[in-house]
Image 1 (cartoon, rainbow, N blue to C red):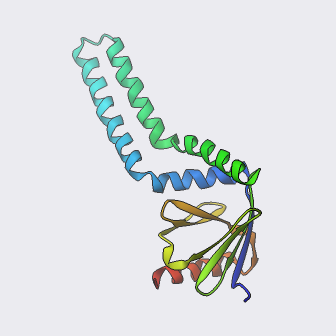
Image 2 (image 1 turned 90 degrees about the horizontal axis):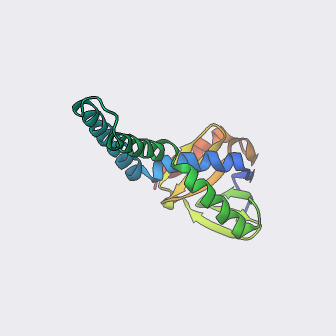
Image 3 (image 1 turned 135 degrees about the vertical axis):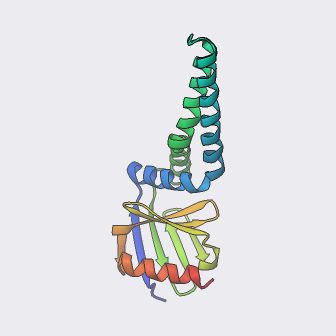
Length: 170
């Protein structure tokens, strides 16, 4: 059976970072929310201590500001920790960042790398994400990465309509 769409992607460090940054935002909502709340609380306590300590910049105030900065970093740049972990996992599994082919059929799609092949039904899709260069199909907390310019059968805009219809009919 011939696929309706086919996408090829040669994973690079830049594309992996784009993927991890976008999925971190979605998959780690709870962690990011807690980090933002903790940032606000610690910043408030730091300002409170600074004002009521007679404007003396104490170690206590510095430590509160430092903790606030850590929580803010986790909110905006926490994906950097996941990036390193994902890169190591991919290289351990594939020997390098993999080349992937994804073929889309009527009822499912197939994700093919040099070491494995997985068939996934459309009903398992939980969300789709889009970045500047990527279209990401989420299956729970796992993502299937498509390069927007990587379609060798079909066009990205036709594919986007196709996959949205598959998601809306499940």
